[in-house]
Structures are given as structure tokens and as C-alpha cells.
Image (tube, rainbow, N blue to C red; front, side):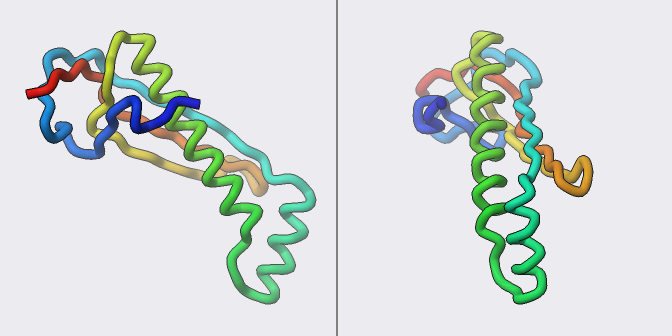
Length: 112
């Protein structure tokens, strides 16, 4: 797992204190996760009783981290040392599958 602190990322078009010296291009990281039967049963019960479905929260947090890691790896393959204009998207593929996408622009930055 890549530590985000070791690879600057920003949802803005810049990273404060740095200048973009080269644009490497569009990068993305995608993961698809399926909920297990146990999670579905727990979610059904929570649906009846109300409250946070912790199994799904954990699954989505792990999916988010995995998609970010994959986006960073893609940027490194292009020779970038940062990603700007980062966005994330999530959608259901089926009743029990969720995709998480992280994307942005891979750049080379230098301290100002």
C-alpha cells in the first residue's frame, strides 16, 4: 500500500507550495467489490432496525484505499510524482457489487 503522504494528491488543480513542471496525463485506479452473504444478512437486519451498516462501511473504506493506491501506481508508471484534479466515483454494478474509481491528472511537481 502506498502512503498518500508519500505521494502528493489534491482535488485542486495545484498543490500549494509546488509548481507543475510537466503533465503526464490522465490516470485512474478502479476496484470492484462484492458483498458477502454475511454482509447482506447483517445489512438486511440493519435495514429493519436502522443504524449504520459497519460491514459495508469497512468494505467501502477498503475499496477507496485500493482505488487510490492503484491510481498512484498508474501515475508512477507514467513517471509522475503527484496527482492533481483528483476525483472519486462510486456506483453499484449489481445488487451486491460496488465499483470505486479514483482518477486525476498525473504531474511532475517541484518545490517553489
